Image (cartoon, rainbow, N blue to C red; front, side):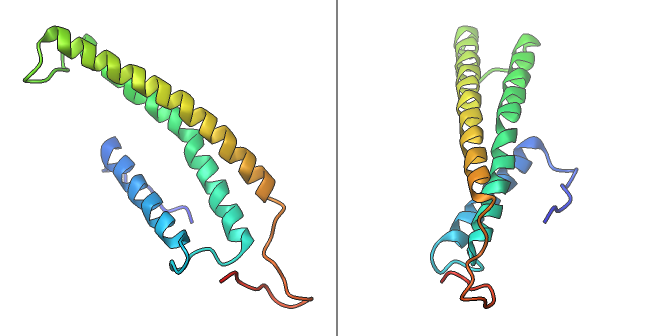
Length: 136
C-alpha cells in the first residue's frame, strides 16, 4: 500500500501525518482493533514497514538539525523572549538533542530491522491442511 505522497505538504505537515498514521496503526493492533492483526504474516509485514520507517528517521533528524544551523548562521532564528545568547544556547541544545535522537533512531532502526528479519519466515498459522486461520 504505497500511496502517493502529497507534494504540497510541508515537512512538518508530513511528519504530523506520519505520526497520525502510526497512532492509528497502534490502535488497530490492539485487541478488538479493526482490522487489526489477523495473521502472523500481518505482524511480519507491519514490522517490515516499521523497519523502513525507522531507517529514514536518522536522516530526517539530521536534516532538521542542519536546517537549524543554517537558519541560525543567517540570523533567521530567535525568540521574542530570548536575547542572542539564549537563542544560540536554545538552538545548540535543540541540535544536540536532534543528534542524540538520530543516534537513538539508528539503533531503533537496527533493532526493528533485526525483528523484521526474524519474522520474515513466519507465515499465518494453518489448521491441519486447512485454510489460513486468523488470530482472534
